[in-house]
Length: 324
Image (tube, rainbow, N blue to C red; front, top):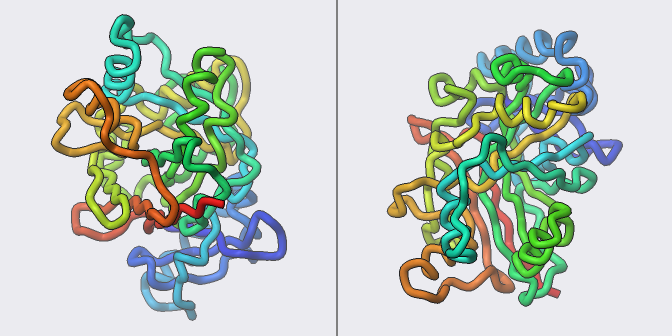
């Protein structure tokens, strides 16, 4: 099942069901007014949503053209947004480039920080209001949306609480990251509003590409029309069940909590990168200095995931930078 949020009577928008080819949609607000309401009442409403999705696919219900560019983030506001960094290759490269005297050490626990969830952006919302000297970057990553998760849930059980999968651009301002990491009190200025692809999908929509608590597909990134990378989601050191269990070690997680994987990264450097900071790290390691600049005014970022048949899974993130 594929779900989206379009503008509605409240900032949380209005729930829509979208066809697999992302061309058609049908209103679902009579079942649940918003996606957050659907997640909060998943046991009560999921069967009705799935039935309407099946009717949409069969052409047995009146539908409208789906305007992906006009969609909001699946959850424009969420109870909580937690982002991990669980691709070891990315951590290794950043440590080697920036702190060669202190290589990244394997951790028993995943790295996770708590971001801002009050202003989650849609797939075509501009990356606007930042200065060039703030180091504007993108980060392509996968994420999950969970229902109510009990405290101290086990990793295997935690996977069963995943209701939807999402695609994320975790916009970053690198000029602030070093200071905030050094302080050791989490990211704040370095992590402005996060953007999402228009479609949230149930895990079964991925078939065998959802396996081991990981999205087993490549994430395609373009910068201003040029290929930047297509790293694969399979190399997560900790899977999503382990991320959820870590977050729920000392507290419950509310329905609608979003958890991200962090920058998708692979050991094979030929697949490129999903963020500029990683490419710059590779340049420092190989040449002693970075040559790739952070994003400039008017540049565009496009992030998309295709299934084995070449069809878009989540729709695309297509954002332009607007510097004031």
